[in-house]
Image (cartoon, rainbow, N blue to C red; front, side, top):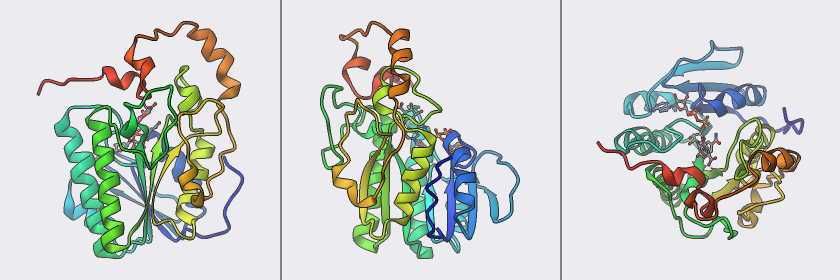
Length: 273
Ligand code: NAI
Ligand code: 15L
C-alpha cells in the first residue's frame, strides 16, 4: 500500500462499489483515514470493521440512495457497470444511479465527490495523439457515454450548487498491465490510492477532470490542467514492458483496437435488445 498517508482526516466518507475490484482495494486503504467509512454496493460485502458501516443498496433505488448519503461529508463513487453492456443496464446503474447520487448529495449538503469516470469517455482519440482533460469527449460506447453524462452532471451540480467533484478518467487499474495497450493506460493500486486521497484532500477542487494513470513512459494523456489536485504517481508500467512486448510481438496496425485509445472496447457491441 502507498506509504504517503495524508495527516488530513477525510471525515465521514461513503464508498460506493465497495464489493468491486477497486472498491475492495480502496476500502482498507481509506478506513484508517476516515472518522467513518460507509461502504455500499448492490452485491454482498465483507462484514463491517471498526469505524465502518456496510449498506447494501442499488444505485437506481432513489430512496435507498437518499438514505445512503445521510451524514456524509464526501463520496468516492465507484459503483456502477464498469464495461460496455446493453444500454438499458447502463441507463439504470450509471445514468439514473449517478443522478440519484448527486441529488441525494445536494439534499444532504455533501461537499465533495470523487467520481470514477473512465478513459472510455475519450476512447475514440487515437493512440498516436496526446490529449488533455479539456478536449471534447469522444466516447467509444454506451459505457463511455454514461461516464460522460456523469462528468457533465457533476459539472452542473458544481456550477449550480457548489458541490465539488474530481472526475477520475481511470485508465486500467489492475495488479499489473495485461497487454501492450496497458503499458500506456496502467494505474497501479498504490497510485489509485494516491489519486483518490489527493482528490479528497486538495484544498480547492472545483470541478476537475483528471486521467488516472501511473507515471508511465508511454502515455496518451496530459494531466497538466489538473495539477492543482496535487496527484503525483510513483509507479510505472515500464518494468512490465519487456514481458508484455514479448507476449505480443506483432500489433495489427489496421485493427481499430490498436488505432484507438479504447483498445478492445471498439469491438464490443452492438447489442440486440
Ligand atoms: P467492478 O465492476 O469490479 O465494480 C463495480 C461495483 O459496482 C460492483 O461491485 C457492482 O456490484 C457495483 N454495482 C454495479 N451496478 C450497481 C448498481 N446498479 N447499484 C449498486 N452497485 C452496483 O469495477 P471496478 O473495476 O472496481 O471499477 C470501479 C469503478 O471504476 C467503476 O465505476 C468503473 O467504471 C471505473 N473504472 C475502472 C477501471 C479499472 O481499470 N478497474 C477503469 C476505468 C474506470
Ligand atoms: C474501464 O473503464 C474498465 O472498467 C476496465 O475494466 C478496463 O477495461 C479499463 O477501462 C481499460 O480501458 O483498460
